[in-house]
Length: 457
Image (tube, rainbow, N blue to C red; front, side, top):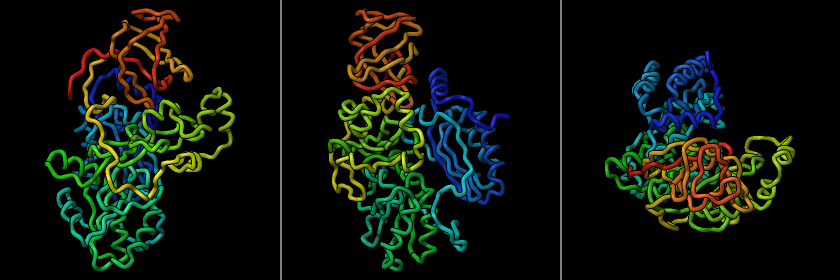
């Protein structure tokens, strides 16, 4: 009986590409009393592994919190696995506006003390006594009421790239920090103000709304289904979007665009940008915002120190990381003195730029018919040369290719020059080792595809 992953992320990505099937990125949560979270976890893993469902899921005595990638043709079968539990009958599944077949590459289900860490030890607090749920248009209407206070219950790196107009955006790194801060800030408004709150998918507000009712706030409201469901209603029902910018998501995409407004800056040069990335130095792995120009110049690192470490031999990098503590002390989220243009809690009140309608990330706009022809072997960062092994088919000058990987994402380029074994050639065939100039770094997990045709989605 298999209860854990047996494939690496790279192996899973290859299988997904070879299958060529559309996958749906979705999320859901439910607060419920679960007597045996370990057995619940194991039962879910067996059922979902059989459907090739992937994702990051937390279960606890208080319920379940899930972000997942599910094959589109298994969607109803997946829903059936939820319906066997009374507390998940008819549960709302928040399906992402933008899809990415690589959003999750493993099925990870962990048993936690709580599905949302809140730092609370109050046995009289009833999480089921929650605020009033509002749909998109209802939320907009209350947002315009001058008697309303709207609070963003997400973290600073989430609200920095997108938020609702006029929202309070706490400068916090986790949910449990925001509860006492907002409670203290709004002590004088318990009786006469509408407390309106939102988060990514609703789970944090589900607990926050109950907490603030417990603290004596009279008029507590929350966005039903969070920003994800709001974006769907905006798109399908023609509701005006009061949310500006990008919604940060906790999968490989790191964000899905709600409006064309760019309200954040590249943390290194200050140019309008809202693309999050992780520092390529694995001893840092800092989450920060980086534009394409800085990404090329800094090779996806957050500082000159990390760039120097990144260029060291792998053995030396491993030696430097030895003994380092993991967790927030290493994997920080946008807090570094090296980032000159980092803004936390002090967000711009106006749009800095508009996102272009055209995008290099073909996942968002184009359906691509492609064939796998090779894999990445090396990247020479100083000369910006990528090396690939052609495993099948042929590649010629003028061909359009897609380079895809869990960290690299999906990048489309047109081949203008090919070097086979160091010599210029118009064509490369199976078994050839080729190199060509590439302005971005490739990794051993990256695959090389020839694009056969593309059409607008």
